[in-house]
Image (cartoon, rainbow, N blue to C red; front, side, top):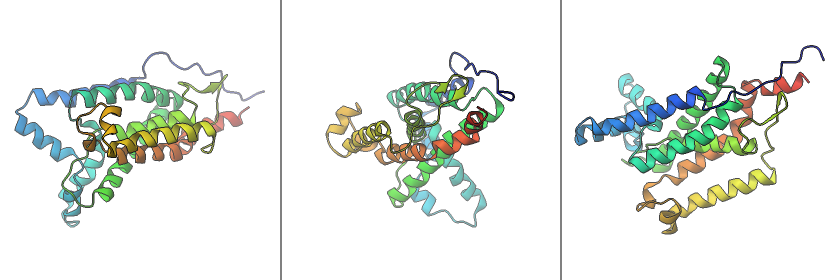
Length: 243
């Protein structure tokens, strides 16, 4: 039929945007080895989401308000230890590659869609953390919330890296598909173990209470619900209509 797009051949290898995000995460973590420990801890607190600090910010102080708004993005590039950054980088490599390929992040428009999905998820998780922490002076750091959104996007496309039917992108699985429901329940239940001693074994940490399980779930639900919207922004529904 006239008007068809040429068959889409996804690029091989790791998408450049994923390599850049990996490099940023590793470089930021490496700063801890280049500056005094006290300064590094101060930088972490400065760029982390701190609900108590957010709640006490004077809305008329534009500089302070701008700083707090900035932390809803910057917290996603901070990590507490090598295991934290290492696990998140592996997670980003797997699910980030999957969703970057889905949104065609090798193109300018696809790159904008992918980063919008990733960073909006991070902002959403920061907002959720502020509300669930009720003004406490605890820190939210790490990309886990945004990565959970990427994982949920992968669930909606059946965990396929490219998820194309020939030259056309396959539609996302319905949110009530039994596979989507099954994986979602398992992920949520695994995170709920973090409120029990079993959480230390499941997530290989000596401090299960230090892992923001609420943010994992919030990010996952965000990705599960919004992935089709970003998929449309990437033009995948329009490509199917050309058939």
